[in-house]
Length: 452
Image 1 (cartoon, rainbow, N blue to C red):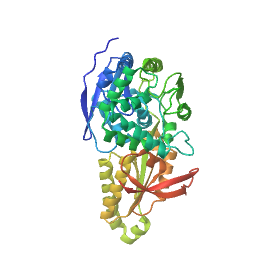
Image 2 (cartoon, one colour):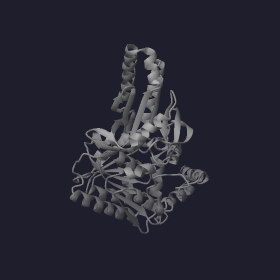
Image 3 (cartoon, helix red, strand yellow):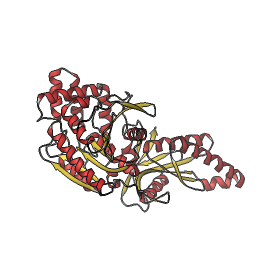
Image 4 (tube, rainbow, N blue to C red):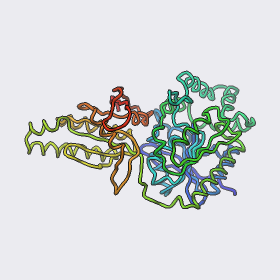
């Protein structure tokens, strides 16, 4: 099937213009989330990339975009976070009228695709991830990550693509060690035009902090985890780790393929993607159903020493204070796209689709109420919540409430899960150590927000 190179269009996401393309007329939508750096139009000039894109567009309506700071999208200062990149995806989907789609996440893009599927299950029909790692850096319980020294050397080597042509080609060959010279030369141009040196450094800073391991069990859509058996960047053990933790995942290890597939392997992978998604389409996986679970950040706030304050003020003055308190909290929830779930006396429970927004909302609530002479505390956790009649339930809510109980006056306290998910946001934390949360198994490391 011959597909014309699509026109690049733009949509506004916040204050950033996101470049996107749509090609193909298949029965369902497929959103392609690229890794590392992207360039929508140069991808069509790489014969093997173009062949794979045409294969994907032969069975779907293929939706592609350049992430902010890369390719034809607006340059940005600093690193884009997973949360803002999810906003960009939703902006593109809304612009092209895509209510529900399958997602293909490649390399770095896989982490964002997994987070999106858990957070927006109503918009995600299926998921394919390839060369995926849920965490970047080494940890005692994640031995495949990079050490600080390894990551520093990797960044230095990546920046050499902006050096002499000879050393740049040497670096580009890392991505496709078995490809012929012409393919590697074309891919080098793709990398050099896809991002500036400063943007590559910013991306490395963000990627270094990525850790979505806690999100994996909350991915409930049908998922194919594909991984090259010869991948030297992300070991195949990471793919097995990822697939084991996603309830509906199937693992496919592809012999003879490395981290990126630049040659004939790219088409092979597109064929496997087609087989997986078409089978799901035939089985009715795209039929809209109300999700019964979703990933959310839950925020709890309450007035410090409220009983003593009520006694001190008396009934009428206490009612006036509560009215002022409720108005300020609701104003900030509206500003930061939080959803009020419940209100009990002087406490609020709200839910957010992004932890950075939740943190900034909590900080604004604490500050504005302090200015009004009301001391509050806030706590939050990100986890899988059950949905029933528009209400949230489940262990994530209990965890958030217990985190809040450990917060001091004027403090915003978060679980380590929240901290891990705001990588690259510029939000700073102080370690508050390990705590036991009443009724919640295990020990939990808590962090106080110091800068947002």
